[in-house]
Length: 528
Image (cartoon, rainbow, N blue to C red; front, side):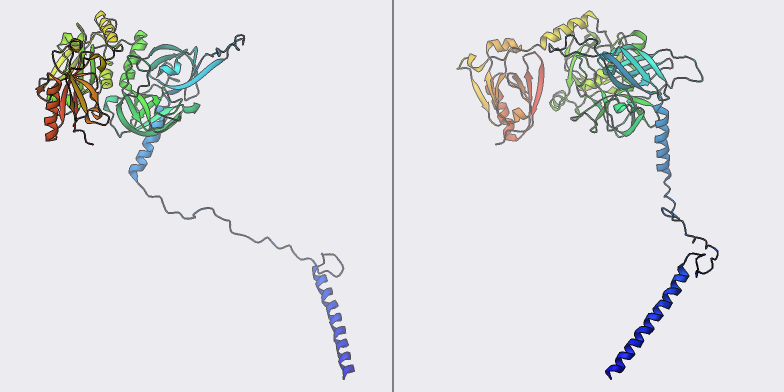
């Protein structure tokens, strides 16, 4: 039995080997290259298989929504940018460099030139460009690059430090060349601007010429105290259109393509755009530019008044229905204001029909006029609105010069008020505790200093009290509380105590050491 099984296994092994050899020969014959012994005859080469091309994106997109208003607005922005940008230029200003005064650079040889850049707006066909004074300040060479790549040398025509504006003129301009005229800007009316109106800023920030940004008018009539001049005029348009270093002197345009402002400054802590840009209104800029072109300097008319904003206390005292206008605190003797009949304590409401509610707005309105011109001034006096005609005087007028000298003397540091220890100890003192203020009677010297016959001297104001919160200054004299005349410290205390019991505010008439009268409204009594 065992022998039979071994024979059967051996036979199976022989059959398997012979079968495997036959299959291998068949496979190798089919895979051998054409022309080799035993290989099959070669047939035609098959064509490569065709594949569908891959399409990127949606092959059958839905049409975008049609919003005619948005398409029209988009076209408007692009049209305005194309038209207005042509008249905005790039300025490169070179000037002498500086050598450190440190004792180590005395023999450095020629000093390299420094350069600064900015923007400008072409305002005449003969090549006058308005820009900022700080852009061209100290420059010995001015080069101007237009949007169409033309380059010009330019000369300085004049500057106006009070508005930080300047005018330069392009040299070798081919006047009357119909084939290649200069692109002159269209000027708008900045008096028609409204807060919230769309505007575009065009200039060369960081040397990026022809840059356009957009935003809105954020505020009007801003004063930010950036112009370093005693007679500075700051009545800026504020915008959130991006303005950066290099935009100075560029254009702020409305959606009609009209220039409504000259970009001048930014409010920033980091040196770049933070959402607050400022531009000189074009009405003022055009007036300054015209004077610089025609006369080489700006001739500006003056009224000869000291002014400040009207407060709530002033409005109450003067019987005004609302808080508005500018209060006249002083008048130049023999000046334009006095000649016209203007008085101290008058409230200036409007100049030539345009309302004024801040000193810088008033100054900006007057700056549109030259000496000798007459302006209409609306005032509040004796409980009613009145109108006066004022003929302005110039800065060189002897009356104005004398007034400036007197004003300078008055604004010199005042001697400190008489110290309490120099006052006799028996002078009566009274505490208005509810209001946080201590009064005492006046000395003879103080009556002469303040020009009053009686009153209550403000000797101390408590920290956190109503008197401090509402600005009552130490070293002044209270002459009236509401409608009650005050002749002593006791009367001032009693009047304030009566108002505190009723919970009423207190309107104080106060005399300052410089001779001016002011009003302070203490809104509520002191609360612990």
